[in-house]
Image (cartoon, rainbow, N blue to C red):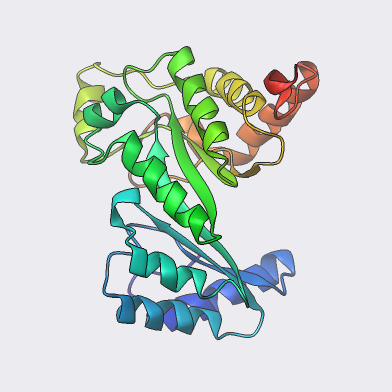
Length: 250
């Protein structure tokens, strides 16, 4: 809910004001979301994180980044805030298959993600993994294997995204050539349920679908209707008599 060009402090203040008015919020988590928020010298990161946490009502810090951009010094810095704040480290995995990561030019492999999780856990940090359903070349079994992989790693949280096509990207070119077909909303809803059934019940589900920028979105257009998608997920859980972790019960 912030504007591009605003300073960090302006973004924090405007974001907190927006949340107070919309939700009546009194406690906040500073979310360093877009791009790679650990890619800077530690003194610079300490200044940024510290400025965000200084505001009254700011009780936590969530930092999104890549698993290949989190060194020991950065992890130590994040861990230093644990005594006074809730701290989450968000790491992008997207898929537990190296073949897919190569195809989407991710730039790291699954083993790199696994090491990042292990290093974060060694410092007592909560880890939230980001995954994408509907990646090119992935079938149902492959996506479910990603869920199983996250469960084995015992990450504390997950954010699930539908793959959508953004203007000016290689995927947009492939889509225009009819080389990629987006998931239909009903397909995505069923995949989400199947995915959640394979995640441990204690894992925190922080997101069930993403929020594309409307001006950048090519397809599928249904991803702009987030509330409708969430309502369908809830409805299908009830219709299927399902719940998170159902497939893990023996």
